[in-house]
Amino acid sequence: MVWEGGREQWLAECVVRVLQRLQQRQRAELVLPLPRLTRDWPANAALNHARLRVTHTTPAFWQRLAGGDEDAAFDALRRAWRDGMQVWLEIDNACFGLLPVAGLLRLPLRFCAPDGRPVHLLARRVAGYADVRPLPPGYLVVARHVLLTALARDEIVKRRLQLYRQD
Image (tube, rainbow, N blue to C red):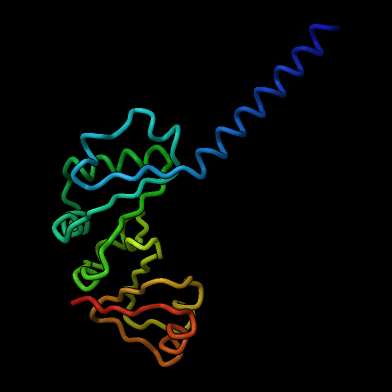
């Protein structure tokens, strides 16, 4: 009987430890600059981090991603997705107009600016109120062919979104 009580306590402690590790992982972010993405990938990345943020990305890298060109960096992103990590690409504000919006939207990526605010991409032919309403404040990059309705433009202002159009 004493052993049973000890076993229950041991199991409870194990559950508490597992929950603590999961909570730590949920808050942890692995930040790697693009040049180090492939060579500095830690073996236990997915065990200790829920998110991967790639900094110092370049227009050439976005074009390769959007075009489906496979290289070592794309393999690292695929490994992160396979392991259940969210992948964020950090994009410099000056380069928003160069983003291949439609191509990047096909991938399970999230985007942010160096200041940490989200970058939202939009490539629909016509973007309305419903497309803009759920977006938190940040940046909105739209493909060059997107027509914004008047209500969408009003909502962009109300939501404090900075609008950029693809070049």
